[in-house]
Figure 1 (tube, rainbow, N blue to C red):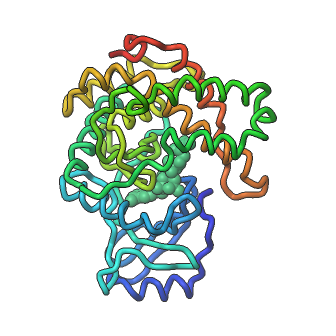
Figure 2 (tube, rainbow, N blue to C red; figure 1 turned 30 degrees about the horizontal axis):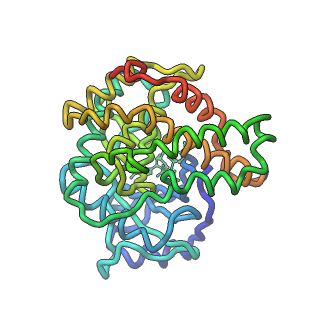
Length: 324
Ligand SMILES: Nc1ncnc2c1ncn2[C@@H]1O[C@H](COP(=O)(O)OP(=O)(O)O)[C@@H](O)[C@H]1O
Ligand SMILES: N[C@@H](CCOP(=O)(O)O)C(=O)O
């Protein structure tokens, strides 16, 4: 359950007095999510989301995230909109945490991914990339390839207890990914822009089979656009048994290319980008798996789901394997 910080009735009332969003009607913690504490807020003016930003979000970067959400919404992307208080301020403090109110998005995220989701997902991702092109502020990816070795070092000692041999397997995998990363050494860089960087199914809302909105921009950053596709290939195109669904991948890529055709260097880089994306989520999950106390309210996600994906990508050398 992702409510790390309790909010008392008194603190909430004082906080909401600063906003012109009507009278409070209902307030409840949202069980879903991993990173931040989220609450659904109903007032006489409608539904809102209250977010208290927790450990992985750097408060100095919040204006960048909120600014990106405002910017892409202005370009037609459906995403939560930060709501300003009576003084015009987007970010305040509640229960000792940085806090913001955003608009509530209709729709539900798909608990079971179907083929019909994949092309609209690809289109929504490409539209987000197009909308982000005119957002000038830069946020480097703090979970990019230079962050992986130190992140691994911070959990190396616990790796073999999660799976015997995992430590050596990850060392070998990093050596097969980082030197081949686009932009490293002589490898050509790829088109860059603002990417979501966590566009998992729980961050994409659908109404019927149409995307109704994208949420959770707090890993967004300025990076290679094709890396966002690689993240989606990992998050959307694997079956529960760990097998890769190449038809899902083909539809996702077709959807993306309906809006923005990939360059040949981007296509060629998909295998290494997919390996890197699997590594990134494997490492943050491994860190959380090892460091989350047994009595914590949140259930850490299984890092080994991403080891299966990583193994698939390391064994897949050709674009055929990705439906390209
Ligand atoms: N703007 C929104 N509109 C509607 N529901 C939302 C909105 N933002 C968050 N939620 C709900 O809160 C849940 C957790 O949000 P999320 O941003 O993914 O949290 P976290 O950053 O902690 O992972 C979502 O799955 C959704 O149910
Ligand atoms: N998508 C990440 C975890 C981040 O959770 P989110 O609820 O913020 O999407 C993962 O699956 O490891």
